[in-house]
Amino acid sequence: MQQFLESTNHSTRYKHLNCVTLFLTRFKLLHSELDKMAQFGLENDIHSILKLDMPITNAPVARWQRKTSSSNNSGLSCLTPGKSSNVSLSSSKTPSKTPGKGKKTPSKVGADRFIPTRNSNQMDVASFLLTKENEPVDPNNTTSENQKAWSVSLNGFNIEDAKILHLGGKPLNAPEGYRNNLKVLYSQVATPASVKKTRYISSTPERILDAPDLRNDFYLNLLDWSSRNVLAVALHNNVYLWDATQGDITLLMKMDREEDYICSLSWTKEGSYLAVGTSDSTIQLWDVDNQKRLRSMGGHTARVGSLSWNDHILSSGSRSGNIHHHDVRVANHHITTINGHSQEVCGLKWSPDGRYLASGGNDNLVCVWPRVQDGSASNGSQAVHCWSEHQGAVKALAWCPWQPNILASGGGTSDRHIRIWNVNSGSCITSLDTQSQISSLVFAPNYKELVSAHGYAHNNVVIWKYPTLTRVAELNGHEDRVLNLTLSPDCSTVATVAGDETIRLWKSFEVDPVKKAKERMVKSTGGTFHHSIR
Image 1 (cartoon, rainbow, N blue to C red):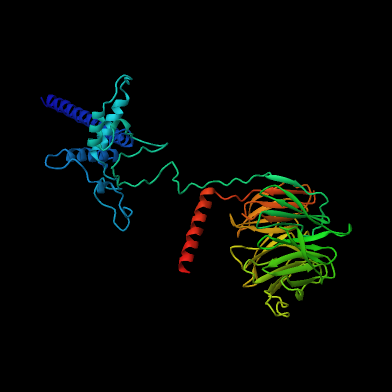
Image 2 (cartoon, rainbow, N blue to C red):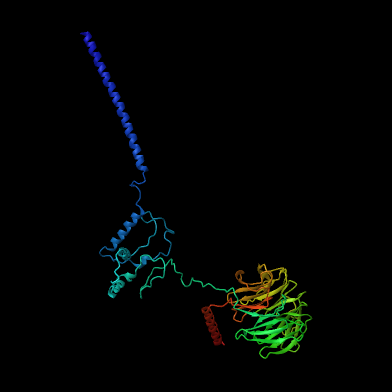
């Protein structure tokens, strides 16, 4: 019996041990399965988070959704009973101040930027036009006048002419009496005020005149244009007149001796008389209308290469370096002599207001002299300014018509510079290297430009914008160095004479007819006003 009990206890213990072992094994398996399931769930969660195509539930509302909701709300609000369906025009105006400046960013969702309020009627018209585009067009169907009138009265415009977007072309005309409070911010078509008419400068001369036997001398001044539109040119020992209005050519004078030649020409302000400087040291004064020599004035000891008028005072410069002032009204014409240059005086110009006389010489000097007073022989012998910055002969001199205190000078082959001087301060305002010999200068007032004639090495005419001295145009055509240039009375044409024995007329400064008519109107109004004061 005891053995049976021992065997029974032994088997029972064995069974219990097996049950415990089985339970532990199953528990381990269950624990491992739970670990695997937890790890798999975590991986799924991570994968779901990293996927970009999944909807974001906790994110703020997208902007297109906000727009849709706001447009729906505005459409509903316009159709709400008791409220007007028309939005005030003032609400569609751009605010006077930039939105957001001086204000904090609103915390309300959907108010991140300023969007102007649109009229619901405009959205309805746009929707109607979009759906209408897909419909077939019936060529036989015509809109009646009543329908157009209803459309204008209801919408403010004809719906047949309405556009959703208008990107180019001429804008539609608003109906009569329609007032639009919205301002145009951008437009493809330029407004008339912003359109600048491009100025055309011809590269070819308007006319070419033959000038045989022209003396090719840099230091002489052989061309001048009168206020009566008559061009005078010196050809060796002859003086010819060309009437630019009629086209007639007249031989004014011829020197007695064949070896003598003309050195300089200068018209009076009225254009009736012509002063002629010669190689025999004399100055002849001619009445052009009667083709008669009035008088011959001496005093110089060398050829007279430069002349300039100031009312009844005629100033002359010679190869001796002296400048003489002559009063042509009296028999004893000589007033005073200026000894300012050591070599030939090849440039001589009175200022437009008659206050100063500018002289340039072969000694590379530019001098400014005061006005000669009547009855004072010693006055005017002291220079106001004397500049020595040029490194070559100074023949080219020009006073600015609209700024009488501005003088332009140009140097010869060794210098090639254009210099702008302020006579009041005595300083050089601008200097420009033209890379070519400068033989003549003139201001063109129609466009406020400076014109220069050049010899070696370019042999051309250049137009410069004043006061920047930027190159506007080049006029090429002369085959030899350009000796002189002069401006027509209306300041629209410049005449040039060169060593190739030709005179070329360049019409480069013609004024726009509309601008010219306005200037005439202003002048006539000013003259009437001035006359009424008197």
